[in-house]
View 1 (cartoon, rainbow, N blue to C red):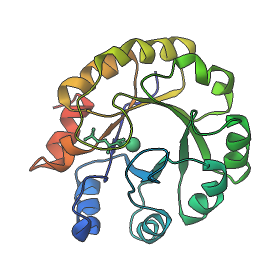
View 2 (cartoon, helix red, strand yellow):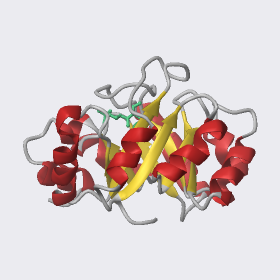
View 3 (cartoon, rainbow, N blue to C red):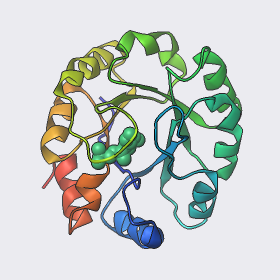
View 4 (cartoon, rainbow, N blue to C red):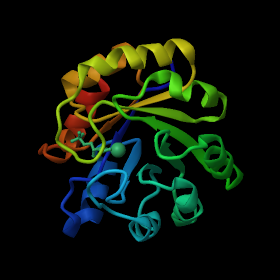
Length: 214
Ligand code: DX5
Ligand code: ZN
């Protein structure tokens, strides 16, 4: 299984202090920064967008993992990559032809990921596994932070890990020290966590607890 990596999501941060929060995440040992872009169409809410990525790109050297919860990812891929995304993950449910989007992302020199909503089976991404840097298994309904982890997603993680032993499997939604343990045991290696880290007093300690090394 690939290395365990922790990817804090800044979705629920206080945006007046975003730069400060990112420095604290860097100092706390975050491996990756996870950005959630929402369009008010694929999911009900609207969050940050391309200008935010662009400004932060000059500010942080961390790996930028961009999670597109949007319709028409093909249309936005180039702008997101130009803004500084290191990896672009879109939802398999969002486009009729995921292959076209993956090819475009890779043509632009970026890593591609595919995300699956809770009701979408793992088999939806099977045809694309050889072209992907990661599969993102949503462990809540996409659209907001602070929801409870859905344990019935664990077999989906295990199924993907069996099918692709060296692939990055990312989990996103309701991850804390306890649920991270279940997700790691099922085979996930990239753990996204928003509120569990941002609401903690010591980012370094909460990152360590999610990594499973105290
Ligand atoms: C939710 C987003 C997540 C969110 C996770 O749709 O994709 O990345 O920020 O937040 P928590 O960890 O609080 O569930
Ligand atoms: Zn996310």
